[in-house]
Image 1 (tube, rainbow, N blue to C red):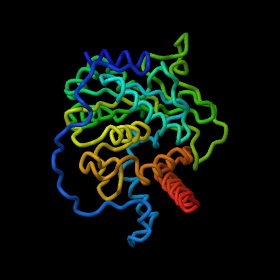
Image 2: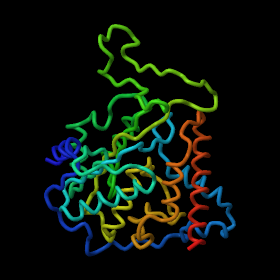
Image 3: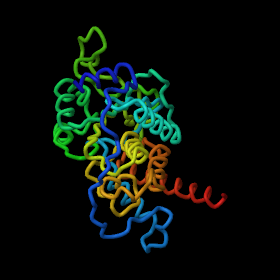
Image 4: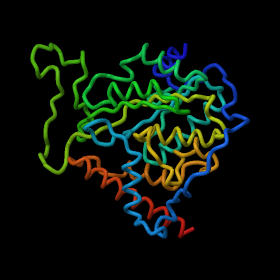
Amino acid sequence: MIFLALSAVLAAGPTPGAPLSSVQQADPVAQAAPAETPVALEDVEVTGTPLNALIRDFVNEVAAPNRRRGLARWRGRVCVGVANLRAEPAQYIVDRISTVAEDIGLTPGEPGCTANVVIVAADDAAGVADGLINAKRRVFRPGGSGMDRGGAGLREFQASDAPVRWWQVSMPVNSETGERAVRIPGECSAPCLEVMDFAPVIPVFAASRVTSQIIDNLVRTVVIVDVDQIGAVSLAQLADYLAMVSLAQIDPEADTSRYASILNIFDEPEGAPGLTDWDRAYLEGLYDAEQTRQNRRAGRGEIARSILRAHRDMQDAADAE
């Protein structure tokens, strides 16, 4: 059963499973031409729309934090596991996501590490999603406040017919210590006799109405790939798409047709050979931005400014070459 494969990957790291048909399909489905040409990041300053406004629109479109929480990101080590693909494409995906993670300042897991990014390929994605949720529900909904997209979000994940679907779990933590800042049902500090034994205690180092000591870190990503819907998408494109949705909280319903983004490849396979400048600037901006903004709108503004800095750095590097 595929859900047993997920349990094994979560426990023991990257484990290629039984071989499937080729990741690339021979006969792509013809796609309708887009209504307008997507805007590439290097071109946005001459379109008549200010770059800042386009970046803010992109952030607001794709960013999908958990309810009443700030945008979460990985902190420290990211270990990628792939199940139910042949060894060669599985290793390529692991290596590619690990490379992108390292590029934005994360530490790729060593071989044999316990996977916190789990990718499962299947020709029955709906059945795999049902099996995983029924067998390992606490993997998807640990029960802590603000840790996932909620019951409605999980039902949408379960019912999705997209080529790739993903589910992420984040953890509110103390930015000073990295310690958990939310209670998990069933956990407490022995002897569990008083209220304070059931909830983390967060010493406040500097109270502020502008900043918060509590930030959100990603702790688990589960991705299911429906190999029957991959169409003309190449393995390289698929790996970069998986990197984007694994390393950031991306809205599955985001409309990114206005932008030249890897997120469009299932609608327009020839639109991007890999991560675009928009995608790279978004990831770099997300991981460079200050996470401690008390106001979530201000937090998105900080990410937008960080993306703008990343864009300018990329332009300066290109000019220097």
